[in-house]
Length: 427
Image 1 (cartoon, rainbow, N blue to C red):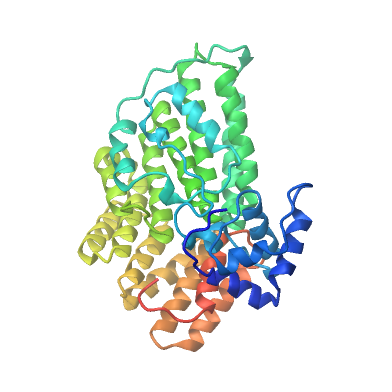
Image 2: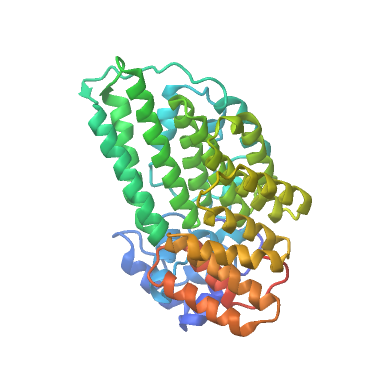
């Protein structure tokens, strides 16, 4: 543990007070879930609560697990330890995932690392703001040669179809039930595809090989999304970069832009770290490859860009991106997702009058329970901020009903923030 300037962990103190647990009780509960030989002392939780110290793995996640079970709603790593300051128990990873050559070999390495269960790390300990933006020059370049694929393990089109179907099913489950339900299965699927890329025989069928990288990229994107949903910000970023590399080898710039868009949403809600501007990041991606997107894909990414600009408080840029998004949306296409993105952008700008009809449209039209729960909380917060506590409470109750049992750290967080003391500004 790192013992820097003493900073009381107010979030840990709040949860212990809520549970009426002493630090000794927390130590006993944590020791019950730890492997033999890794038990903590009865005084360790005092250091976490009163001195701002952060436990190393696996104790950090054990605390999250124990408190989540006791509280009945997800308690994430970032929630407990993220505000304690850099290097207070966090591991620092190399940025070589961005700086290594963008080849098929390094894509396999990145995919392998994305599937590992590693100790939690802070997003701000990974990549500085301009590094990800500069990477657009790499992943938007022509695809590298498809090297490898000379192993003895046969790879067939039927296997690829099965992998794609498995990914689609996991994605639907995650959207309905939260990232916590699908993170480990998605990692296992990603590890399996990694083995096919490493040991498979696809050198004679380049289209099949590149499609296999595309399947790996989608799985890595899902791992990143699920990790972000649980508050594992840096692990999510690592998975997104692996997905970028896989999309580059696959020759799918549309997938790459989608990955950047997913990362943009994560950064918009969790914070941008060391100068990482999500609007700048997605804007660079769209400038490089936006012209290669299908109309609906372009509309979605422009909606995400509007969200990021809204978070930055840039009304002019947010409205311009929103107008472009609506113009790009094909006639007769499903509007609900775009309405939700632009509605949240307007919430960030305190434009509640125009935000609420869009959010209501999104809630009515989106099939995924997790997305509806998030939007309902944001809609409830809008009612409360504009002096309508009755509708705010009723809308929040709808969100709680949807979120019951959901394995989503983000949904848990926005509900917790709604139930806490009111804060200024749009959220």
